[in-house]
Amino acid sequence: MTTREDQPAEQQGTRGSKPSSPSASVPLGLAALKIFDVDFELADTRAELCKKIRWIIRIRFVISPAVVALMFITGWQGLTTQQTLTRSALYGTLITGGIALLLNGVYFYALKRPRIELKPFVILQLVVDVLIFSSYVYRSGGVTSPLTFLYILPVIGGAMLVSGGAAVSLAALSSVCFITLSILGATGAIAHISYFVALDRFAHKWPFVVLMMIVNPFAFFTVAGISAFLMRAVRDKTHELERATVSLDRKARLLGMLYDVSRSAVHSRDADAVLDRVGEILVRGLDLDRALIYIAEGDGLSLARELYHPGLSDGRKSTPEVTIPLDPSAGVTAVCALERRPMNIVDPENHPLINRELAARIGINPFAVAPMVFRGEMLGVIGIDRSVTGDRSPTREHADHHAAVIDHDAFQVLIAFADQAAASLAMARLERGR
Image 1: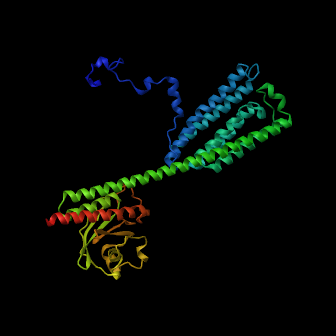
Image 2: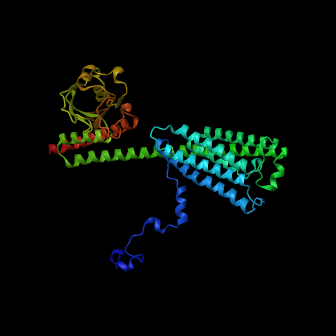
Image 3: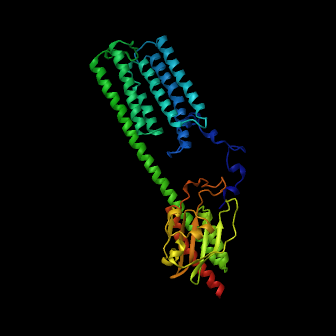
């Protein structure tokens, strides 16, 4: 059996030696449809909102010329039973389309400004869209216009780009514009522009006008409600998937950390090397400022390791000589060892169990501790913390220090990790004793 690599070059294709570009095999018509490609996600971030606005701008560059072409072709070919478009109607439609394209170009370049307020910017665009579509509706017959569906587009855009409330507000604005055009046209306050001649006789008949003023706004609000519901459902599902992805990532990270610490125990008979590896895995895996490892010795706990994240400006510091007696009055770490109970201290400044003397020596930040217990024997305690004012590298993922508190997920990882670290430490001691 031969593979593709085994075949002669002339048998591997008939296109010649030049590789064809992806666009070369795509028909021009299909390539033009790439303007409609959805290249954004529904995440509530500035970057994704910018992508959604750019997508709307691309769509708008198609809609305005398409509406102008539709009005011109239908009138020119007599599909609206007009013999020809009047010059004023043609010029008015072209001017409206030109203004729409010009404004769209302004939107496109304004979006490149880094400090632009996106939501007001979006709302302004959608309001202007409603006014431009009102001009199209007026020039295509007003209350008898077949283009009233255009009002639906900014309503959907409001639901997608802003919120359900914005969609309802745009539906209300569209209704006001349409009703105003209908009343002014029916009363003769503005001239009726004949577009679909068969319906011209209804333009001044109040039963028809009232019916349209009920049906069309009802359609606008219905679309607003459905769009808001669907977008909320999609956003909720997106957030649910994001949370699930984050949860899976954390579980994968935990499994990786547990594997690393187990592997270090298998490949090392040196308990000190295991302690070093345990601290390194913790500070990197949980993006911590510091990990402290206390080892049980007699009636106390001795600080065996104090390891810092390499992203800190001062790197790893020397481990101070610290001994904590196994007495409840000695602080949180001692209580953790005595009761074999993990603890997460969110506000250390006001916690009653804080050992002030120890805090003065090793520093005080929001921290968490977990006992290292193997087969009923308490081997030590692992402590982790994050500093609110630590000098971290700006390239680190969590350089924002507002969330210095050890969160629930990191705390649960610490608990599981402490058990595995205890097993690895016990194994290393066993190997060393042989």
